[in-house]
Picture 1 (cartoon, rainbow, N blue to C red):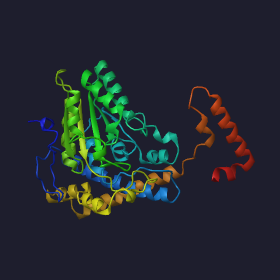
Picture 2 (picture 1 turned 60 degrees about the horizontal axis):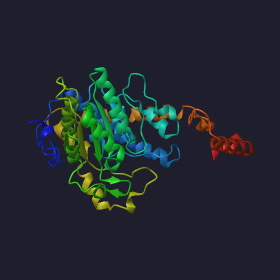
Picture 3 (picture 1 turned 90 degrees about the vertical axis):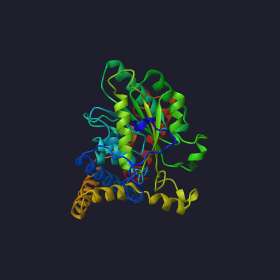
Picture 4 (picture 1 turned 180 degrees about the vertical axis):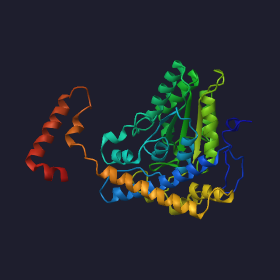
Length: 367
């Protein structure tokens, strides 16, 4: 039986919280397994440094990902080279796995829109801050690819909060009707800012919502990288089935937890207790996979030290590159909002330039 044919209330798991095998290990080569481990370590270190940069005033607001590395990195590795990735605003690890440079991710959160531009050979769309709008974009692109006869899958990430949006309903309904090659990946991290998952839906799981749209849903332990890879790979293959009658979308609900704040503008201690956080930290995806790799002879102390050194160097280089990139002139915020400026924008621009002239550039830009 395919892993996608399981009851959507039956969570898929390969590794338990201690890293012990409790399910069917997917057919993954050693190079990929070690790459997933390295990318998770990189994402965690990048996240720690990015939060620190924001706290030091060197970057604007930032959405932390710690705790979600297993879901992001493993799912991205399950894609084929030509597949497309549609992120929300927290998929820093998944984006980097697909070739999106770390320094560009930093630039975006530093206020430079150029940081949202993917290199020409990287099949990723820009980060979507509006909740769940990217689900419609992904389904539209997937439908177009199918009409063209392209052999591509389209994965779109959204949160448990995004599952309550009308955009998500419309996207999944359209995908089910027209059999678009879409993988809907719900990062159920338990909290949509301060709203708990149980306030999002009365359904027992988010995965079972797929039934209403006419396709399969599967719930997976999102902090188990091997299980995430297994279900995502099965969903990608289903989205690209040779038989048109077998080509279907899939909804994956990855159950996980964000260890930190929703963004650096958020204080999670106001709405959740420390005991809850500590319980979830025992499920941390990085030591779980590390234990498995060590127990199976794929990783040793020297490897871990080397990987940690490489990760620190890569993140330090990305920070240096981002911070040495000239910042855009604040005046650019008025460009490209509309094809032509509206009267309201003209009035705002006049106020902006008047203040800038009165203060002078140095004082104005320091404010």
